[in-house]
Length: 390
Ligand code: PMP
Image (spheres, helix red, strand yellow):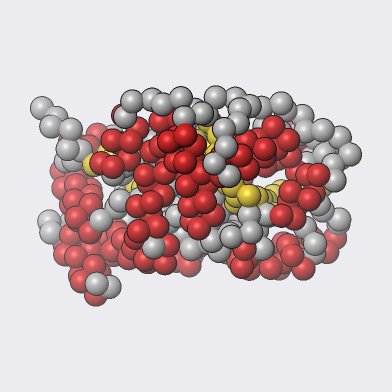
């Protein structure tokens, strides 16, 4: 029998706080009710703080992370523009497809699975041809790879490029300072470290990107995603005024505001540090179990999820026993390796107890599957890491 106490430890959606679920389930107000206007306005302001982007224009609309990717592309790309995609996995591939769909000529820099194209390779590509735009995937959820976005953004700025950073699996979990690092669009979705059930596309857009959009020769190839429709709506709500282009997802926005207030109460630096602490404790547990991570280098490993190869003689069937032991995990996603690895999300409200419970569930399931483990060893390793970093 399930008592609904299984931990949802996939890379999104994740576990959400009670206050967020309460806001989601509250009576739906009119989208022009003064109380809702105030909530929406506060959510927009808070998003600026979360992205550490006081100068940026936030956008919040109904949709998923893919819609946020498409909104960035639709507004920044014109037919024939050249875009460089720094490819770190499945979601970088998706970005390339979206850019092409909006008329960009796309060059992709790839690395072996689990790797990141080197700064030298990126520098070489940028020196060899004129690009308008570069796209980076902060954390690619398919590989668990964390890209060195700060250094890549420095390169982009040196070459005068616009930049789009996909933060879907990173925002509010991985360190990111949009203004200081000069990212033009930081985009994300609600269902991961931002802490709200799926359904919101979120973007934080620099003044430079707004200027580039204003200077377009041709209109965006989308009505729903055109900044021209949404900018006045966001400005109005932030100024406490009603506005309408398409009905906002009222309850999700109330839940977003609840979550962002919790994030700000924790503080962004403390939140980044907590995600790092949990990730390091997970890594200690995985190491004790003899599990190999998919990222090729430790410093390219995300703090928001772990991507791990199954050990010898174990396959995806073990995910079912891990669930029976109390933790829901995700399978592989990268087509060429899909059956060989699994993923553990550790975002949002993730705590030391979640780390120990999840490592314990994996340890028991592997033991049941006949993998050589000494029961308690991985939990002890994770616990020691948590104690060290306390
Ligand atoms: N980019 C990344 C890095 C992601 O992890 C995801 C979702 N897992 C997406 C984009 C797409 O987001 P969504 O599924 O919400 O459309």
